[in-house]
Image (tube, rainbow, N blue to C red; front, side, top):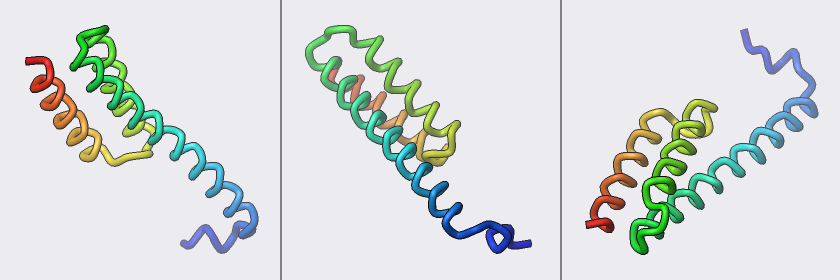
Length: 88
């Protein structure tokens, strides 16, 4: 039942490296969007748009399996809480 024994290890390494690179890009984008949303909350420029983009990126990362669904929900909750606190 272990499918990895049927696949050449160099193929697996190549696939893993591609996935790792792609996941890293997605996670970096997540952090960037989150920081941008919090910065927008402070200075008031395009606040709602920035928050929407950050939330959308978190959802996309969860859908792609880059982060776990519960992690995405937690990040969104914390982001919204911080956003609301800075906006008030």
